[in-house]
Image (cartoon, rainbow, N blue to C red; front, side):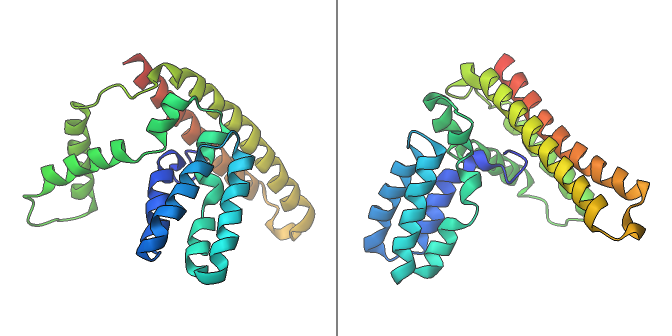
Length: 211
């Protein structure tokens, strides 16, 4: 989900990260297998192919295999949500994010002394506003409405189920001293914030689609 590491843009970065840890002669073949897996017909099939590749790498490059497995489920978000191919190509790349970061860096390049974190945040915000003037509609923007619907369904299912399970665990297995109403309120608020974050992402998608 978007709330778990901005997973949409992880695929291209994930492939580069794995390739960079390999000898030169293996980078091409491994990258080809990973790209084929991420274009599989389903998230389950893609996960099976990537796990098989990790098992192959375990024999000669265990550190690379561990890197491939790390965050694997999150990189399959696009497939799991059933995003149409045109929009999926955009979401699998970090180009849009990296472009915005580049504008932010250029705008703040002449700052010689950073007083505090608030100043850094202000300059970052100013850079994002400047980058926003260059934004264009992404390829597949007509499918953003269906992506929002998919995100909202996943948020309702996963957050609701997790919140219920954790509340049951809290009241059944933890010491009575920790079963305070305030503790329960904190837990519910935490899950509410996570759900709100997903809804905020979905709302941002709607704005982009309308723009």
